[in-house]
Image (cartoon, rainbow, N blue to C red):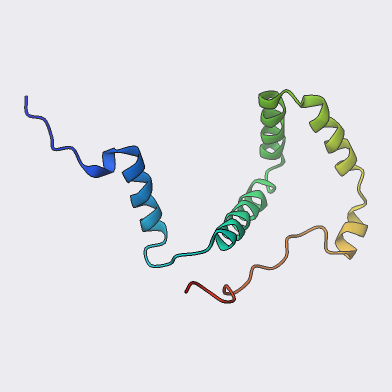
Length: 108
């Protein structure tokens, strides 16, 4: 039986390097910019799952069970559920800030 040639991408570190280069082939960003982009990505994920309350429940339930903090999660949920929706909307607390059109000071 002939063995197929081993590609560099089959090595975990090399595969991660290739994936990173595919995501941002010519853009190098600072650590702060990278964290900001990751935070925006998380916000977009939250916006999508919040359209389906069952997903939010399952996520919080799973986090609570995984970390053994079910009571803490339940207490926090109760406090958040008691917030006045109209007041949140009035102060803009019901939505994420708008996404910047471009990064100021971009990659150098």
